[in-house]
Length: 239
Image: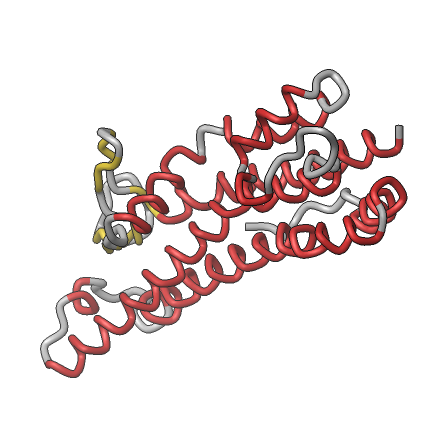
């Protein structure tokens, strides 16, 4: 995962919000403006921490040796250590997924306050603000906000979010997807693959998938959409 993509002048967004809507509106927007980038940073941290745990627990001590020795320890102390390690990897995998999953709704709040959707004759209530409701509100105000709607919808239409959303929703409502370490996977040169285990959600069955295959594409998509939407907001407010 790379750093957040540069190219959105958030300082200019703040200036334009205050210019059009006043200081009070800017104060409402500030937490979302900060959080939308921080969520990317949180996701990147948890992803890198999961990879670090794999490296220090498997790659470094077992380089060139039989990886099965790691997964089938002989003593109780070693089994307890293995369980603790799995817990840490799982926590970071889930936290990374949750951070990415939160970005569309956080970005929706940026749009909500930046474009003043909470104002006017038919204001949108903040408790109703989410990615879907804001996309609908933008469409209802076409063509003025068509540019923002187009860039923002890309994050929900991205196919990489399908499994990510299922992972997070299953974790939230039913229980965390159990991580699993596949040994000697036939489709990989590495002797193991850390995966989200198989699960079913909303009548869809999802196979086990390697953590980077689930997390990296949606992270990259979110990064691009944040910048594109931020630039679209500045474009609209500048006009």
